[in-house]
Length: 292
Image (cartoon, rainbow, N blue to C red; front, side):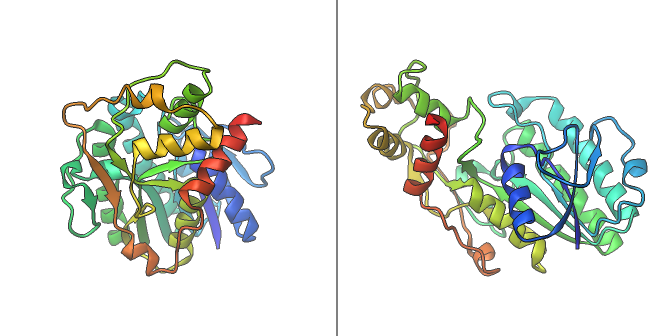
């Protein structure tokens, strides 16, 4: 097995690269910047470079495609999503052309119809409400067709709400942490909403499971245990010995905001994957890194 990994310098990608290295899996990274402490690397701009030329002769049997535009607060409706959709298609075509056998890629819970609340892979309608979700779902459809045509194994991981060390500033949990410490003003949150948060190390483990198994099709990558945002704030405040009141008092419900978003994980657990990090443990690792 020789794995071609994109997005290795990103939030999830850094943890996945570490997991691949710990397993001794031969890994080739591709991106604009070389990840620290890695071996084989192809420098490339996925949006602009000739990927067929760059991948020729790389002898990658497996592709793990994580790279995408994910700037907090910007990615939901950015036109860059269309660019990444097209780049992802070119990447898959180049990978298959050089002899690739197994493709695993990162999707999103944003592909689902969020009015359903609890999302099941084979039952919940796919009705994205954002350009990001639409581009991800279209990429999945393209990958399914390409892999069926060329008899390449394909698995798609729909990630819910990852958190943990290395999470970008501007995401909810780092922002809550900074507000509780007084580093930024308190801000409005729908504290009654329930969301399915999963520690980034467990996300990496899920993608590794999809890579090393015979899995095909779409799989939710979630904890299966949604938590009210009020409870999440209270837990973080207790760990920091801070008052959650200023954040809780600004609770707001926005039009169209889903009260519940969680993922069924039956399909993934049948492959032998399990969450290893509880929310309490995960919040402590996040706080420890942010406080270092």
